[in-house]
Image 1: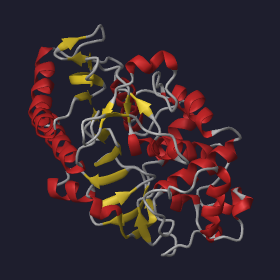
Image 2: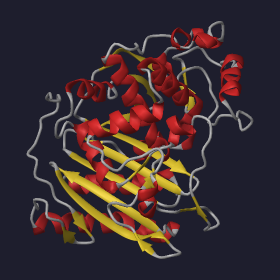
Image 3: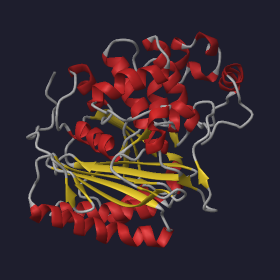
Length: 387
């Protein structure tokens, strides 16, 4: 086990669910009340305005955890949200794909500077000869669409799609947020590491990160904890399987595991040394677009960040646009705020953390609601907790 670059803190933790404490070490009633008040003020208006059925919030402050839940994981039958409720993470799943790719690089299985076709001979002679794995991990491959076309149904069709793909930009010049991009990175990484992506994530990455109840395929024994998502019509839905869904938006997790994941990213606690290096590598800044810095999937801003800049950086308008390379790449820093949104048809998730302040927040909802509402609520909450 090895130390991370950010200072590590004591292992005492707090867990607060609807005002009640677990048997973990408590931070004391003053901090409990402060966190509950701040979370209520930030989240209750959002829940009401967007009619969110259920929401699980986790907050970490100096390594002490608070859990607060609202509403229902299922309407029929009525099942309350708890800290153990499983939610679909949507595109937050991409942070795990980036971590696995960085892990493979630490282990010498690949280099992010490699071209895609170096690892996938079936793509030699295509435009992917010129695309680096780094470009896939930063959405700068050259213009993949947001979604894989519906007609791509199997592996043969997927390879044909990638062979026929024609970039609109040179690699490293333009950011286009894209599931095919990160999905292809997951395929290459799995091939380089010699196992299926799902096996690598569920049986190696999650356990080494200390995530005990995170899944790509939710086991039968855990289905009772898997929330139903609710679409715009209020109908219960869950994510459908599809090509590259596993790598791009397939993880289901709970508030306990996700706040642990943020703590690992902040350097609180220990993980195996090679994995620690890989996690840090996902925080290297490679490109600028507006006020946002693009890491390996993670997006960061100098801290403190103005609310308008934070909202703008998470706007759909920022999904596509020119970027400026950071040369040399920016080493991981503590005086930043890192964040990631994620959505499926029935779920909306958000995570953000500030390493310097040792604070982070996880927001898991079983309804997809606008990113700007998530960002505004998190900015308000983190600003209060940092005081």
